[in-house]
Length: 364
Image (cartoon, rainbow, N blue to C red; front, side):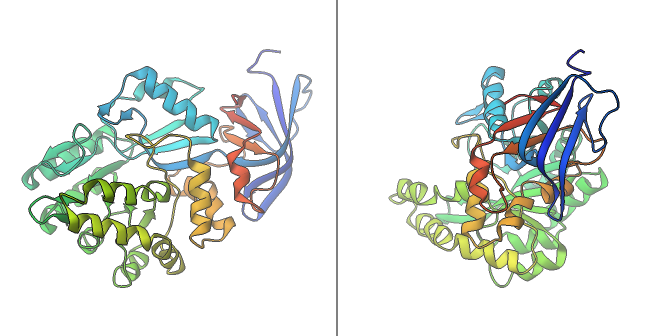
């Protein structure tokens, strides 16, 4: 039999959903079935605990410390994520054209948000379109057409005039830009560390907030009421003390603010979860942060107080549903990860995939 005709048998415990656990599945022609294929002979069996391919909902393939990187570096980034079990990425802003990855059956699937859209001199140099508010609607429309159903704004950043974090966009321009994205069929997310941009963004109709360290008891109910998701990126928030130390001499107010946001990070995430705010896994890999950290982010959500099964859902079943992609469904592309033990009992199991299956083939 050819590789395409070969059958892969996954046997053990297949976690189709939090409450849907089966003993086996079959992979034929790169797709999942729960019925043994008749006459199958060339069968390879993989044993263990199977989950849908993990989701990193905030990842930057093609982005390095100074901006876009060459394709060979982007390939290494994607392979690193794949080896960690991440098989679906929401690329939350990249200046690189990574469409070539779509033609590679051995690399994770990517949902792109186009390039970051930032205020002039209010983001990391080389990462974003840097514009003024009058151009926001036009650039959002441009990136909505270029992306895969998402647009990424930089909602706040260091304001050198005040020496602290500050909102980047006036309310009216944000409302018009989000409305235009929605008209074009795209959802909008925004980088936000601080408190003061959140209410305007949510009331303007935004769909998601990245980091969300500035959530408070005043804004959390608004997020829950509107169903606005957060992607906390706690493995990135862990770098705040280092960033604060580096900027303390020049921007002491900003530095102190970053430390406060870091100190309350777990309480913020737990309060949001308890209020019913959707929470999803994202690492913020790319730029200066390493790829392949998805297991660490799930563990951080558990440390914050999110129940392990919900932290798993935030990178598996729930995350895939939120992004509109299938899990371990009958007929779906066979993207899954197999582990030695039960990740529901200990999410640290995610750090050591036994087998990675992408498009029906064992790739790791």
